[in-house]
Each structure stands twice: as structure tokens, then as C-alpha cells.
Image 1: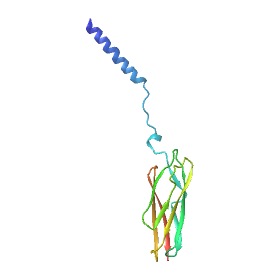
Image 2 (image 1 turned 30 degrees about the horizontal axis):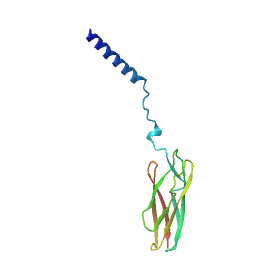
Image 3 (image 1 turned 180 degrees about the horizontal axis):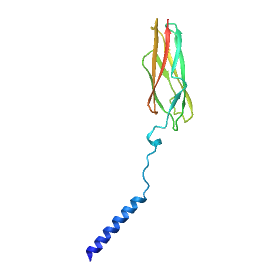
Length: 139
């Protein structure tokens, strides 16, 4: 008799666990959760500064727009050489917001060559690094 009650109790518990698990909502991973939905779109990623005289300091700007769904955060902007310095917005850029990265190049000591300098923008986008370039002929 106790054995039948035991079997009945186990059966009822098993059935309720099985039915309970069927009614739970499944965790669904959507593409929005997998992909980073923040993106940066530059008007241009290359600027030719033309002809410069050695020692001339020039400035140019790379304008961009946050084309993503979340705030864009630029955490660092670095140049591949000490003669190039970049300034960038430190505050988050909201979706559809715009900004610019200003690059200053000092051509001192670069006489007689064509230079190409690269600036790396590190942000919460995918890919995380965007490359910007400037070029000039230094006389």
C-alpha cells in the first residue's frame, strides 16, 4: 500500500515538473543581443592635406555620426607617430548624434617626402577600432 502511494507521489511530482517546464518561456537570443548595435559612420576616413612646407602645422577634422541604437563611446584615439595628435569627444554620442575627431599634424622634419599617418579610433563598435588616415607631400 505504501509502495503504491510512493509511486503515485513520485508520478505526480514528475508530471508537475515536466508540465511546469513546458510552460516556462524560453530564453531567446536575438541578433540585437549578439551584434553590437552601436556603429560609427565617418563622412570620410582619408584626408589628403596636399602640399605642405616643412615645419607647417595643419589641422583637419573627420566628421562622424552614431548610426547605431545605443550611445557611442570613444575611449581612445591614438596616432602612429608623435607628430600627429588627435582630439575627440569624451562624452557619449547619442544615436543619430554627430561629432568630429580633430587631427593636428606637425610637418617639422618631414621635408621631401610624402607622409601617410594613421589614427586609430577605439570605441564600443564592432569592429572596435576604426582607422583614419591623412597624407601630404612635404617640401
